[in-house]
Image (cartoon, rainbow, N blue to C red; front, side):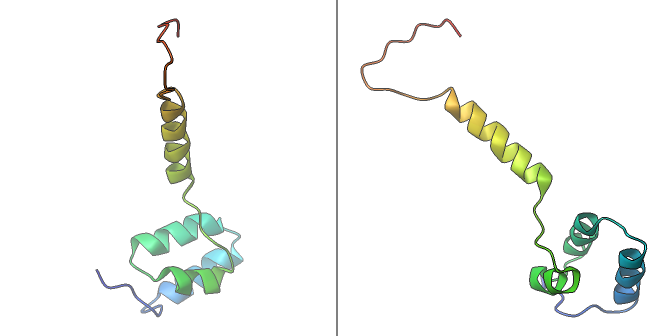
Length: 81
């Protein structure tokens, strides 16, 4: 899908109003990404890098699951966990 490299219509006005209102920039970033605006366009406008907290939490959960699936050569499974 094509990413918008400029704010069109009333999007820039919407963004400016919400910045002035003190809205969470991460939320604004997420909304703009969901509406196919280019990451760098948003980053330059909001002057922040967006990190999807949900994605990081999912990654951390996967890392924890993988921690318990470690295979060590010549180890015996005690099944105590």
